[in-house]
Amino acid sequence: SNWSETDYSELSFNDLFENFYQLKEGKRLEKDQFPIDSSNENRYIPADLFETVMQSYFSITKENLREAAMFEQKKEAYPWQEMRSNDNCVAMPYMDPDVTAVKKNADGTVTLTIDVICLEKNNDRAFTHELTLRELGGGKVQYVSNAIVPGEHNVVPGYIYRLQ
Image (tube, rainbow, N blue to C red; front, side, top):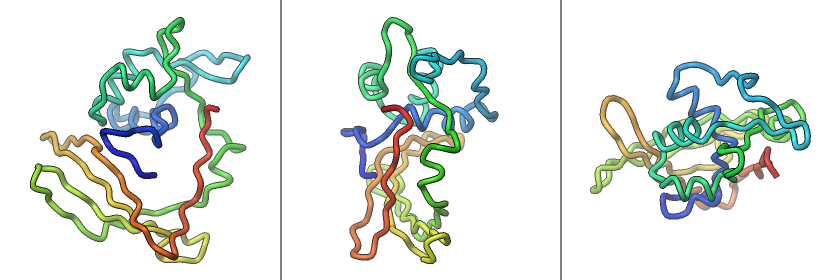
């Protein structure tokens, strides 16, 4: 999706959490450490953990993150649902990124041009996008923006959000 530091509305921080948790902590998220709410099948990630992880990778204020990620004040937590076999993993074909260009920008950021390959759909480029990163030093980066490169043959699958 297209998004930037000035507009994160196309991102689902809730769905991204487990991936960034694994990047930051070096281990998979143990879903069972967060009790499930049987009324909605959500688990709730404590605010301090969720915010620490996501703010490590995105330049977003706590207030904006709370608005974007459905923060629940009464629980002091963010809702999260694990990926299940009946979710978008069935509907979404496997996509493989291929970085085809790296551009250093005047503001110190780096933009990667990425061709997304989808062998399940028999194509060597379903679409291309440009991902911009801010290097923080020590091998760490923040995600600045993403833009799908327009193209008449783009095959960009629709994303199915886990939380409705």
